[in-house]
Image 1: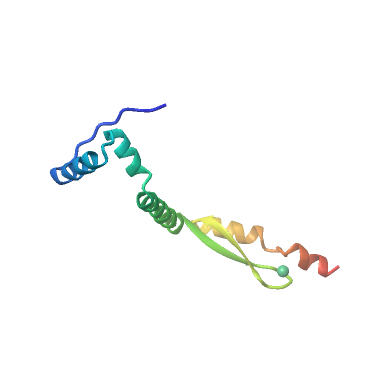
Image 2: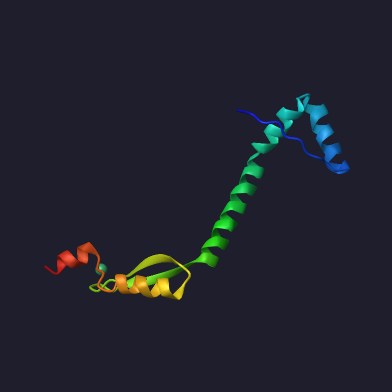
Length: 106
Ligand SMILES: [Zn+2]
């Protein structure tokens, strides 16, 4: 399904848009659709998504490092930033070991 969009352009952008429109001989819609598929724009969107993801992770999530009871190597758990959540997680994983480490002890 396609939708109709309308928007305003300032004089500079309008000039640029007309230039592209006239040079390529394409319809307005085609020019817009081509712009939206531009790899630079796609990358710009992906970068913005990544920044948003990182900001969200840094703001809302913390990491807890839980050591394996046998080898001592850490297991990382993401948790919602809240001291109580961290405490509950650490208690829940207090006796945690890697399966291989546990089996090697038998
Ligand atoms: Zn281990």
